[in-house]
Image 1 (cartoon, rainbow over the protein chains, first blue to last red):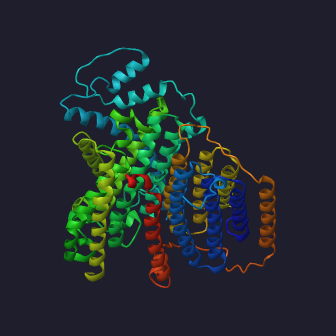
Image 2: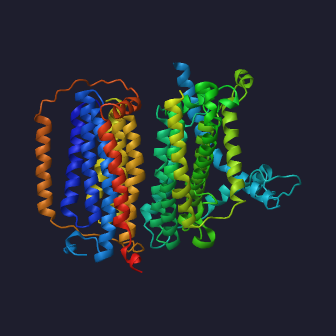
Image 3: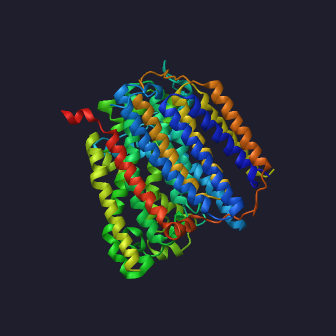
Length: 103
Length: 362
Length: 169
């Protein structure tokens, strides 16, 4: 009933997406914003896999999800390097305090 | 079909038993092995009889014991100890951490193939599953180190995590060579491919897959096995890679603040992880449940296959202990140098070699 | 209700509850650990959707990689011995209202669209081989590009994260 119909997965992914969005809106800590981004990416992944299971009956959605995971991994690595750099410069990772263009 | 179902149920029960027994046996073995290597006798007093007598309050001293019940007595002692949560610790995470470390380690037991119809969960991506579920241990250790609110604990946890994450790379690449030769990720299929004489084991190349030409893989498979074994030592924080719990620097690393049963759970999880790591080595390189002599396998002696498997694993565990009491500890920078400058290039080389073999010689 | 339905409900509850902890808990370290369990739940959802290889990848990359990276980031940028590392949030009302509106829009979309569902009962088949063939066949260009991207990200992260002050000495 739940597990073999499309809508429950879409609803779950929508809730996860909105939670990630909320984290990006309300948090001012760079790492929290990164966590929000990861939630949003996961929500998108669930959607892709669900569509490939019910609508396409193939594996294209899974392939796209693997690419999303690869992107998320490289994005997290680079983002955390930038955050560490920011922390060394302004001694804070609050994005509102990062107002200077020059280092 | 029903037959397979019954065997699966039995193998699940056996695994649950194995999970609890492995820790007890390993702790006893460690104490005895270390004692003999240092010219001591190790635990001698506590036999099963005197343990029972101690529980009912009688004192007995008899000759001729070898301390078989020492681990049980240790367990009883740890159960009775006061459960201390340090002031200033984060109580919820402090209590959650041992469960996650333990759960992550023992979830991996589910996919170990003890015999052909003796696999609790015969997953088609068994190897991948074990590598994936073991990564829970890393986060559990970080959680324990942070929640203890203790400098030694946190430093130990950070070191441990950096070490485990780095050493996952050579492990993965060295196992990919085997996966490439077998063409499957299922542990059961890999063992089935190594049946027959012992030169069919992957340690000696790919003879079982491609006949005599498979012998050209012999050197790289030996290198692969050595690299995997070294990395599994590092992955389970064993000496000479026990930097996370280096006694002279960090007291006891991430479990400094843990006492009583929670400490015992960390300890059990560590030995469980050692068992899983060496079980993968046995499954992939040393023929799993095959004895290496076809006559013995075909004799169909009931229960011999799991016994062979567990014996092989414990032989490797003995080597692990041997290494621990022989080699000195590495420094942090030496550890990272070893991983990134030696192990990873060597695994990439063996990977390349196996790829060329697979493309041009088969 | 079949057992798989209960599994779905448990996983969905885990994911959403952990998502709420990520967003609303004041201690950032709790957010990070909740995020980890949320990733784990998503891996379970992939298994329910017959994507076994993907579930393993999710566990290895997200639970073993990205979560640990995020935890390291937190521990390296906060006063780590101070257990009460809390954080403030801003724009609660505007952000909440926008998010709720977005959720409403998504829900309306989900339930008003006529999805062209091909199959509801799919036999489980191992997908690893198919995925591998697809990567070596039709998807080879994006696959190679992803490899280059990973290399670039690796080198870039090392260069950005390097301590500049040490070089001047």
